[in-house]
Length: 294
Image (cartoon, rainbow, N blue to C red):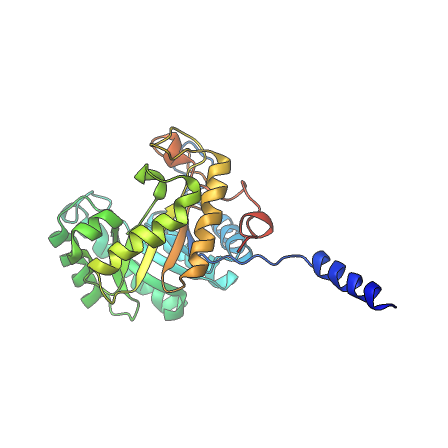
């Protein structure tokens, strides 16, 4: 074999080697309802198992749930254990405010304690109390501190709110980590190709300024595939793909922040086409296409 022939063979071998894409998201959010249904319909154990397996095979290291209805904590934890991934567990304030939800929250704390005993400390990334609760910061954090002091586990405890609410009310930073929802789409001033920059160059610096020294978890970030536009933000399948690609590359560049993609599948029971269409499953080949550039 001549030198030139050997060189060309080497180049062709490199070009023929498939690019291995990497998922740099920490995890993915999942509703307790099955995807594609116009009514809220609980996932079964087999459906949770399939979801967790798919999440693992797509490179996600955890799934996030935002409520314990539908026996979701036990089913999601069991599925995650089988797949070898973790759970970011969220207690939902079903009554709208902390006071109106107090009995349910207290019951869910006991549910979490039972799951912790059953599946082990290592199964859980964290426990959040409330997701964008429409209540005073004082009321929210008082309950977070109460849960943190009484739950009797080593799991980090916090709440989740919009990044703007946390920026404006640093008292929301007071627990074990900061849980912030941040969607470039709803900003209205960013295109899908700027989704990652929005999170890491606008949201993250604002949260670091408000919450110095705290672990940051972006608990939701995604893009809708249907519905109306908001400013320059266009909802389409191609824009959702572009946003996920951009977010994944941005996550690669700053591993100190954990980002959860939103969300596993479309939720037809939600209020409008934007909210219904953040789902990822069934739309994209993540590792073979969307995440390939990073």
